[in-house]
Picture 1 (cartoon, one colour):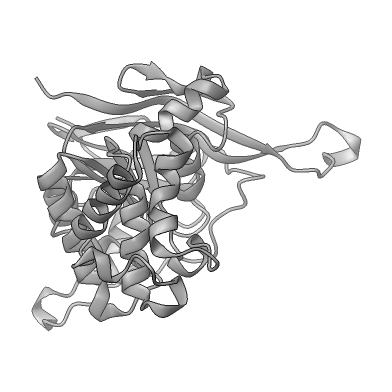
Picture 2 (picture 1 turned 180 degrees about the vertical axis):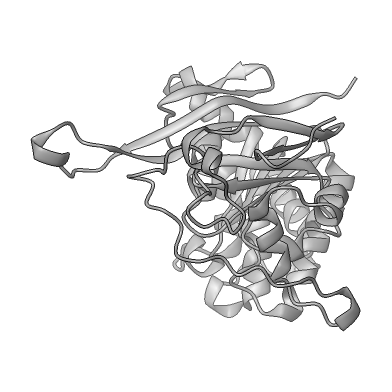
Length: 328
């Protein structure tokens, strides 16, 4: 039986808008995450994909315990972190670590690499001696691809390249030996030549440490080689989810099809017909009625404007929220 490490059910995060309602009515909330159900198994990689503003980063902050949900549950190793106290939140950090998007902003410029990677050990009191502290730091650095680790310990972040800095960020996450790694756009700030190296590193870490990875990205083209499953997020809701190979080969939701259609393909025979969406993503302060994608959908029906679709099973493990999808 597959061991589920992380699971959310009906996860909701609304923020106060600070803007009065029409004619002085109650304020409308900003619906950043609006009912997300996902799960992540041990040693699995789940890619969460969507445009900017769809709720990806808010979802990551919820899973890290940096934001508290408005409703719903987040279970990590059978513990509902949505109801944790401060002490339990600290214990959670040992199980879940995050790799942020910008390695230039993630690192303290006044600390050495050794101090940066060792800081989580110091916070949790996990190193019993200076020798053990350094040994664990070196192991994390080498697992992150910085070898030999001793040559990096006394350096400062400004003395490293962008790719090396992101490896330091990953090492600082690995030093606590977490079960789950949340990677929020970890390659978007890097040169194209370095992106593949960081993605391959995450693949190797998953195999070597049996770590589960939740990989957040706006680029569907970047996940095909390493993600086991994909969840497509639109305006705070998962609109399609399934095994990556199936979703990429047979996308069902119009939004997924649009994201795939604009991926550059070097072979003209493999190019899809471009499906350019009209307009911007709707304001999460004023989510459309019915299917929230219908204002931009080129094949929307009258039913789509009125009734919200439910998940349809396309094939085992592959689901899409669309009135035009035929289920099995």
